[in-house]
Amino acid sequence: MKKKDAHAEPASAGLPPLIPREVLFGNPERMSPAVSPDGKYLAYLAPDEKDVLQVWLRTLGQTDDRPITADEKRGIRSYFWAYDGAHLVYLQDSDGDENYHLYGVNVQSGSVRDLTPFAGAQANLVAREPNLPGQLLVGINVRDRRFHDVHRVDLRSGAVHPDTENPGHVMVWEADAGLHVRAALAVTPDGGRDIIVRDGPGQEWRPLRHWPPDDDVWPLGFSADGGTLYVVASHDANAARLLGVDLAGGGETVLAEDPEYDVTHRVVIHPVKRHVEAAGIYRERLYWQVLHESVRGDYEALARVRRGDFRVASRDLADKIWLVSYVTDDGPVYYYTFDRAAKKAELLFTSQPRLEDLALARMEPVSFQARDGLTVHGYLTTPVGLPAKSLPAVLLVHGGPWARDTWDFYPTVQWLANRGYAVLQVNYRGSAGYGKAFLNAGNRQWAAAMHDDLIDGVNWLIARGVADRRRVAIMGGSYGGYATLVGLTFTPEVFAAGVDLVGPSSLTTLLRNVPPYWEPIRPLLAYRVGDVATEEEFLKSRSPLLFADRIQRPLLIGQGANDPRVKQAESDQIVQTMRQAGKPVEYVVYADEGHGFARPPNRLHFFAKAEAFLARYLGGRFEPMADIPGHSAEVR
Image 1 (cartoon, rainbow, N blue to C red):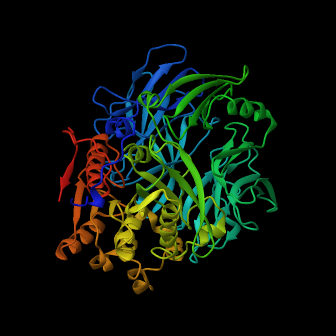
Image 2: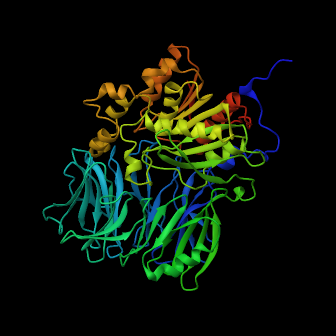
Image 3: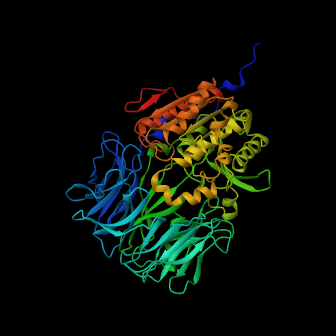
């Protein structure tokens, strides 16, 4: 009898029915609700009749839901209320180019105005303030594409006036309660950071403190009197702490800390009184340190509402109504209205009701020892209905790399688990949240110790008996895509296949071609990755493109044609090199996408290709690929 091909064995019986890809990768039904400042309206994102995400509006207590935007193609994914209550503002770019404009929508008339009408420029919100509800401070790189200057935007007239010019190294601005820019985070030539402050408009900037490149710092806002600046910073500790810094004397007060885990940027500051209410710390799950007694009872009540990690997503200015989201690992996001006076939560809606009755897998927090003794954390998800033994597996690598995976609902994870794969997510060294020693252990370690952590994770999974050594794939986007290319070139016998989504193939070409608005962070990139001006050979030694001849296993690449971070050339060059060497590679380019795929037809197309690809080489289940109207894929 002929022996079966180990790389084509079907998944075992016992799995629940296939979840359609459209349920996992299509648009949500409703998401991202926000209450108006006066508590009168509820806004949220939902698809229109053409399945394009729009901003919808509802009068609270009524059922008069209606869309108030008419985006034609890409869909709106980010918006906020202006404090005048008469305008919503949303962000949109063009086909993934990241040149975001801010658009103001009058909620009564429905009229839409481009608030930042500068071709080729990128805008981002700097500040909004209840005391000046008709104005916004916006960063725009119209003067010089490398630097965002602060502009003052009048919501009613649409007038845009320069406010504060970027001296050439500022990456973050902070304004006080008077909507005056008074603090900035700047990157220094050594890769470190300074916070500079001033007493008011037109006053001289002065340094508040310098942080060397091995420390981290991020400003979060001012106290109501403007005398204290809130920052998350790691100096004098391993894990970043939340501090209140006195601008006059420089004294620091520790407001929140954890001995092992960083305080995240998810800090809750009262929008009017400007005191800190709570600080989020991500351990295995999101934990809240309540810092103000006025909300302690609220957080205790919210913790009892349902299973999941919650956050206050929106509130009215009277602070009577909160909108609260609950994230779970095995279902949609649940959104609640919370009556603070009654301490009562009422379900508003879920992001995707079709997920609620499905057999979805749960995430298990895990940890293992890397080869040098460092403890590395992550999450393991195994298929529902199958014993966690000798399974085909996918190492799913997060992007960043200075980010981390968390306990959350990941459509990609659930898709893989439903198809019969164990999914391992490793927060390799260099990932954020675990203190600066862990973060700095990843400095200059691309394709080295950072990759060793991933391989040690695979070996741990195999030693545990969960994964079949012959059927492990690697997959990821951005840095995760780079890790995929590293996996197939630096460790060519470990993986049965790889799926790379917008991953760089060469560190030299990546760093030479970063977007112009990344110019302020160039010293930090040089410190953490390598200096392209002086260390070209070092960076080449960590570039998969130069080792493509080692590739033994098949590779699938997905790329956005307009990606400003990882240019299409990064994928083009490794595909060309592989094909010249006769290496197996499939390549799909999406004409109207950038750094990731925002449009549902493109997501559905790519994951259909990836599903068939993984089934071919790992033996998992797959849903046959159907016609997907509206995708922009070009198979090359």
